[in-house]
Image 1 (cartoon, rainbow, N blue to C red):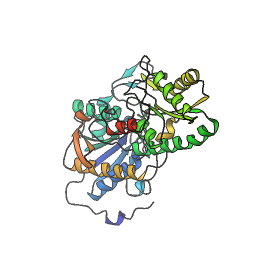
Image 2 (image 1 turned 180 degrees about the vertical axis):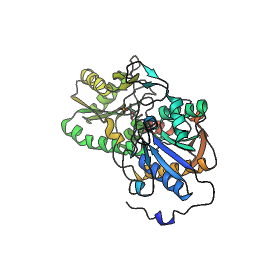
Image 3 (image 1 turned 135 degrees about the vertical axis):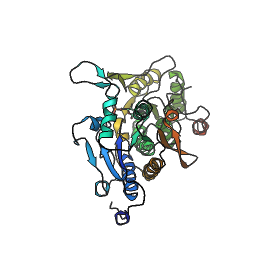
Image 4 (image 1 turned 90 degrees about the vertical axis):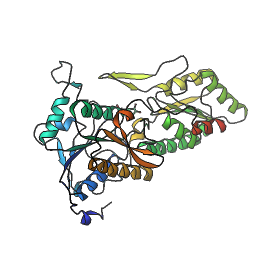
Length: 373
Ligand code: F6P
């Protein structure tokens, strides 16, 4: 995809700023589109744009090794690409960095900000989810870092924005997978349990379960009863529907259960395994032959949908407008279909879960989908 806009990258009047952009936390489809919009919007103003490699890690690298100069060529043809050309990390919290000497985590946030200033940067566009934006907020509040955040996560669980980019693509991927499972489930008269991402919020499970016409959708917001799931499957069986599709968010829990996780890595719990547990229980509780699968990182990969590309480009351009207005300590957000700006404090206060009175949830109920309650 080539850019037709390079020729018009004129230098607008005003001060020549040098800005930096980074991507933190788990990747999400649309990151490159945000970077492109940030860079082209900056160049158009006559500013200089640089990328920081791997979240904040690039600022802790000696010299300029951790920095990437971003001109129009560097961002040509990347709008549709998954991943991030800057690299990312979900282990690079500068307030608690693991040290190589094994002496435990160290606070290197002061160093990050010092190097940021030494490189002559005047603003940072930080693209991230709740973890990365909380770091950005602390860097702003404690060290005065001039930062504007852009909300990213396939989980769609950030407060103060109606959607994060990456979510639409993840839902499309999950919906496609659920669709494909129907024919094999039906042919073998089996129950298929699909685990999708969503640590604290069931947005992906709900949207893909509804669009993919699942029979049961289990979300972290609604602790489920196994009995309710068994009943739904057996009711379908009695009606001659001898297969069922169950979608379960990785963070869903049974009423009397705990979140199912695989391991703890540097203080972070890696979720996974609830689909297997649900599948085993269904096999035992209904006598049905049951299989499970975990969609995992497939949901984070691939090309962003048109909706995500557009949202990413809008967010990126809006972030540069916020930098121009000096609105630091804020995050661009989608509200009532338009782009606005909210404080990072508000944006990172809590996780945005699916409201129990959401019309989407109600739609699922109206269509007879079992939510496990
Ligand atoms: O925050 C997005 C997310 O996809 C979660 O749903 C998931 O638990 C997590 O990232 C996995 O991250 P990683 O495997 O990269 O540590």
